[in-house]
Image (cartoon, rainbow, N blue to C red; front, side, top):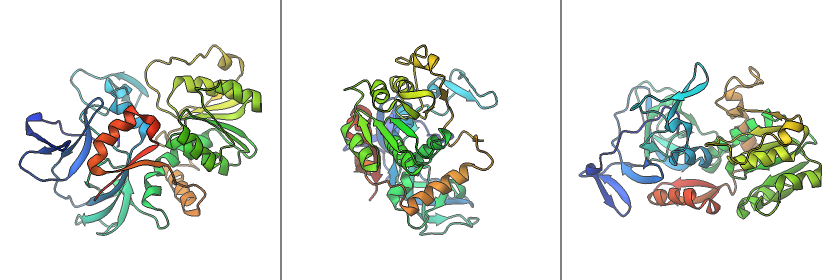
Length: 374
């Protein structure tokens, strides 16, 4: 979902519930997954708008969610729930009473979608009916969007690869912003989709020691398959201390967990003068993060803004958003990185609302939710 996406409010009297799915009464239309309130996911029908000259209509094949960012919004815990970002000043300010915006409800759910073009507007030049395309599109059966909202799927990349481009570009940014170099020791805290991709990016960047820290067993196992030399369960050990004892600390620690306690452990695991890269979108008070301990004494560097959207980058103009995406696509094409094992669970669209509640309430059963369409 993009920052400027919006959803029309739901009028309950117009909804008919059937087998857990909400339909607009009297019509049969395409459906979408939305949250109508914090932690309240439903499937509802929507009316497709007419096609404008520079728009395309797309039938979805595969969608995937971005658990960290989207679940923060879904739970109503993001700063956007009550504030707005003044882009000119770069600060959050209170949102005027009664004014909606990004992060409000109803909220479309989903991060990336792969689909097939079924119709094109008269002025569309770069796409045609039958093209396989992908982009930042929510979990819904069809899409009518401007041509530049999607990209033509490159040959050699599967649908699964395409919906994993997002975690791949974030992990590439994390490794580049942390300046991971040949021979470095790297610790990655949080082994969701972004963390698992970061394991792969650190390995191909030349790291000779990679430690993954994650409480969920299936994620630790996958990290080891991807090249992690050691994985630790933070509920079973003092991860920061263990990394210091075994390796003398790491050169770079990357936190993708969204947990302040994990960020604190990342600081503890990092050597004197080392670098910490917080990738996650944190929320709420920083409980468990104590900057008066190792952070105060070990002269470390913390790099913020490891977001693809945070342009210009530190390596600009040599590196811009296009180069980041082109690099990830080439890495997939060469087989240097893989999406194998990342998409779990994969559910049918009719099961999407229940699956969304599951990834919220039982994160140990998931890595990255994917939705397939009939």
